[in-house]
Image (cartoon, rainbow, N blue to C red; front, side, top):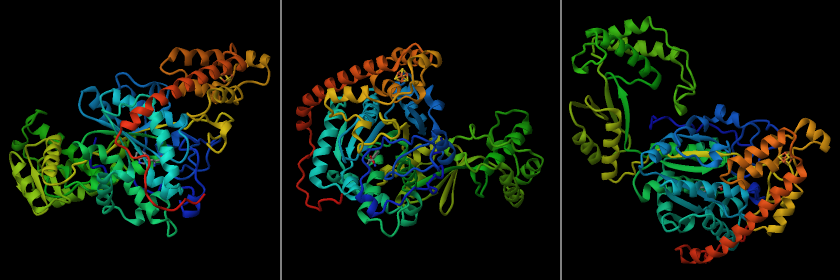
Length: 566
Ligand code: TRP
Ligand code: SF4
């Protein structure tokens, strides 16, 4: 994966600007809303009403990749992965690979303490915990600065909610000794990192990404840079490593911005080059094709020694002139870089460059650009480059290093000289749950969702009275089968109640669609499972009290501030 992929911070067409008035009417879903019909337009707004009409649109529109594409790289996938609840990702391959090779990786997510934790948050808690059990460093954070600045929550409300989130996270199995829990306001390193990253972002960009405008409060903007710092924090406290951020797709704008900033703070940019002039990604692909064809032809052997081939720019131009570039293929083009791949246009510019190069030999090389390096770091880099090299004003060309060797050297020099050396963070995205009453799951409609603090009997009752994908009459149900795909109760089985038991979800599904299962009994079974789950979870929450008290986290903050605007 190209670490230096120009990132995807194009406008994300937010629905409404997160203005201060909007901040006064808190979104209460905590990120689990889903539209009950197709949305008019695709929009990913972290502070809007998160609704996704068609998940497939997110692939096209924003370059989120289908999780299916990486699912096979995960040895023992979580049930949310197996069941398509986790539907999308960015560069999760890096994390899957680290996991498979027993290399370091991390998982981090954050929670805005605006209300009670509910079954939508449980998805994310479980995702963090699963990655921890797979050997990752795990982080859970309380986004208190965001809750205060973007949602107007008072500090005492924040303390209370934070406590409830953390008890559930611990009750579900987060190992707080191995992992780390923090609140944004208490983490000085995160604040400092946010400050540093903020120097590489500007307001126009926030306008384009989030729909911020002149009415947006400044602390809200600060909470955005804080979140980018959260996302990179696992790499700061330890070493740069693949990091997955499990979130709902509404958080993707933050992930995209952070992937960009992670790159912008790097000291060096490493690219491949063939001659003194610059090529963009598409041009490079064509020049490589020309070089490979001519270098292989020169001694009839594909395994050529680069130093001995004598391929000139003008000869490559001649070859390229007759070359038909393949049709762009999104699937092959490699994720983030895919949009805009246009080899026909690149062909004409590559030709110009090669012709201007004349007799200059084409020689593959890796190029290090000085992006943000200190003078000492640039000097140290020159020293560190092994083999034949050529030093220019703002860059160094190395003729005997592979791209990945070069990346490693660049990162090492950067870290040794006070830089971060970040890798771009990865993400996975889960579907939002449908409300039990149909439509969105929203905390403002108690019957639509189940809080992890709900009395188990209430949980039972809510499931018993849930909307279903069933037919009007039992006869019709037997004849036509139920619509499990449209059924919030089936979703409960798949997202939560069946746990790891795939047989149960399969049985419910097939019995439903084959007309062998009637909704009354189906809901009774689900309602009982829900009661059991809540019973058990709440018992574990009580046990977690002690764990939480032992942790170094202040849940009784003495911050002064405003009471919030509800
Ligand atoms: N913005 C997230 C939310 O609305 C919370 C959050 C803060 C977060 N920092 C994060 C999520 C880092 C993931 C990673 O809930
Ligand atoms: Fe939903 Fe179960 Fe009824 Fe099928 S039988 S529609 S899964 S409640």
